[in-house]
Image (cartoon, rainbow over all chains, first blue to last red; front, side, top):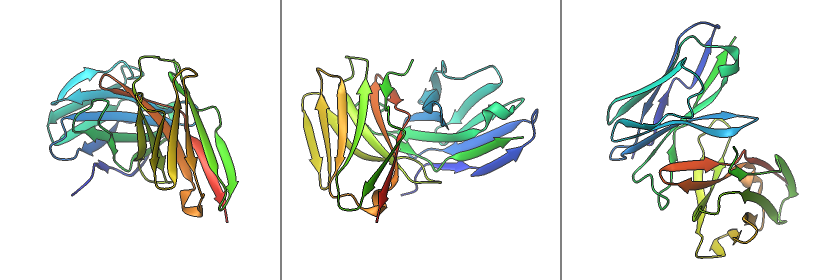
Length: 115
Length: 110
């Protein structure tokens, strides 16, 4: 079975450019999460979806960040315009239940560097 | 507001010895805890979990202990192996959200 697939694995861009990160969750999972990993804060939840609907985006740092899930098999996280402080590893994860009994299945992450 | 905390950013242990990774939490409503393991350039993967109705859960070389009164859990790895070198995150779900600690980087020295 394919796991959570993220692209690109690495992205280097210049400040002010638009960045789009992509995620394909595991088929049948109805929860999708976007996390950001930094040294200072560890894994931070940015936003999560249930059945393609955004449920909680309180972790999205600023209006420069937006996320969409147009269908059950695809989600995007967009940063426009990007800034150097956005440099981090961004993980997408999916879950079949999202409840405490469930666990998260992570993709391999997208490492973003903004120069 | 860090509801799950891992106060040791790193830990080094000799191969064959015990590794103990610690995690503290502030929210007494948490009723389930998970540990994830992360290798470089990979996503975190689930390792072991524990429900708040238990104080111990064991899976092979990995044991998680929960002390609810102290709001503390720990992961024990015995014996430690070089392949255990990774970053370990503890996590607690609340509703549909998962709260993660900042991680502890474990290095097992051959």
